[in-house]
Image 1 (cartoon, rainbow, N blue to C red):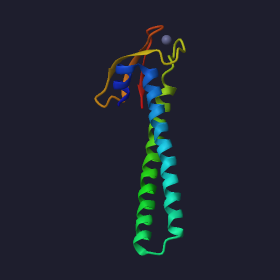
Image 2 (cartoon, rainbow, N blue to C red):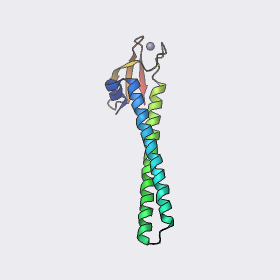
Image 3 (cartoon, rainbow, N blue to C red):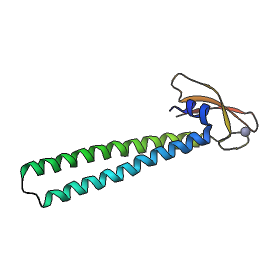
Image 4 (cartoon, protein in one colour):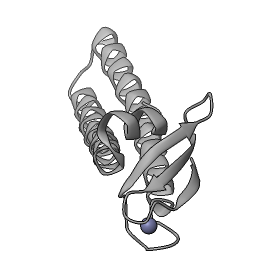
Length: 126
Ligand SMILES: [Zn+2]
């Protein structure tokens, strides 16, 4: 969901909250993948057969790849949310996150917003 869509549908604060929840869900998934990596490595200790080892190595690689993807996604989502949050304060009256969407570009990541308190307009870009 782009910044413009998020502000239009939910308002800035709800969009920001959802971005944080989504990013931290990816962090939890990263942790679960790490548990999967250690469990697969632990299962290799007692096995002698090559097919069991191949299966454990495959599981390890799969969990590690999913964990790296989830960690990257966590950092991307968190960075976007924080970048937007730093621009969500009205430059004139310092109200935080109380804004309405006026217009956005085609990507939806550059928006012009207006403060609900003092009607001052400014641009946000993530
Ligand atoms: Zn204002």
